[in-house]
Amino acid sequence: MNTVVETDQKEGASMSFFVGLLLFVVVVGRLDARLPWPRPRDPEVRS
Amino acid sequence: VIAGHFGLAAAVKAREPRVPLWALMLATQWLDVVFVPLYLAHVERLVPVPGTGGGYGNAIIHADYTHSLVGAVALAALFALFAFLRWGRRPALVLGAVVFSHWVLDLVVHRHDLPLLPGAPAGFPSVGLGLWRHPAAAAIAEIALVLWGAYSYWRAAVATTRTREPARLRRAYIAAAALLVSGLVTLGLDLIGA
Image (tube, rainbow over all chains, first blue to last red):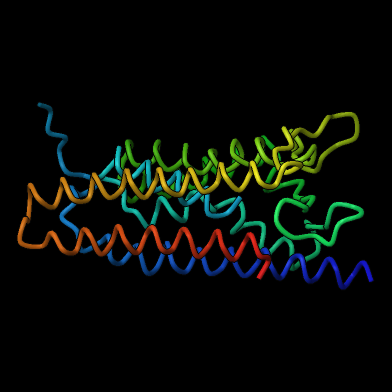
């Protein structure tokens, strides 16, 4: 029984983790990459 | 905490626009990413709190390497090294800090299951402030992180796009909306244990 509970719990945590990783790193990451952010090595502009 | 980590990373993007968002999102979950193969190898475990059926806030993690204080620092340094080679000093510092923020947020919610040293040697305490004992409060805190991150990101994305490429402002709205929806979906899945 404990094994079943542990497996269910882990699967629940796994789904939200992997779905979150897919959505944020891949989907939102690609959408964000289309925006005109400064590049990592661009010189910093000070106002 | 899953969605809350992403929310924090989105807020960091608003302050550090040079750092790619995908790298921030990967960094904020880096400890859990490394946890996965160790879990599959039965080196680290995640079990329900005794007397519960598991689910949101009712897990005890036995991640004596990835989620120890020293282990988190080492994983942050590893990620920062990769970032340094690819993007330079400032993104490396930011991404290293974001990796370590995972341990800090986990410290707030976890029960006493976060060891200080890798391998959790006997005699050394494990730590955790235990907000998960109050799942509603933990969920509210996590929602707040998601909303704060999405709002911060939306403001920064719109301001940057309006200044640099105003014709593409719609893209900023789409990215911000996708970020908010992703946070709510992730949190929803975590809460219902789906």
